[in-house]
Image (tube, rainbow, N blue to C red; front, side, top):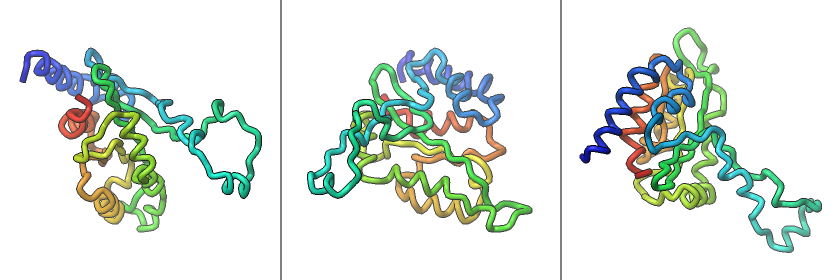
Length: 202
């Protein structure tokens, strides 16, 4: 490990300990603090994919069968709006992220408390088209990792059914999500990124 890399690592540890602990599970505040003085940048509501679908070409037969108003596709916002993105400003590599907060079945609640579908809506990220676009735009092509990261918050992170469901969905890609449980501070979120995902941006 080189001197610069070691210095960067120590900076992460110091910032996580001094600032992220008090962030009260605000991902933006945690990473703004953790990335201070590093080559990493947190984008809030990144616009990289805001018009992703406008460029999709349709066959004339399909166009004839659908509503096709006269729209300036260059000015639309037919795309994807991730909650955040983390970029290595030296390499230009980006991983896009979603924050999914949801209720869940925990002590004192009925099983029906876990009936929300925020976690299910995140499954769009697994579609072949979005995975391809995320890899292309973020320049992350390693098959060891998916080009996105989902941070789950709230009681869903302790729900016995939902935790198993999410673990099953992600299969061999367990590093691509993080259960930010209510008793955890920001340092654990930063540690997960640092240990599991950061290397794919370098």
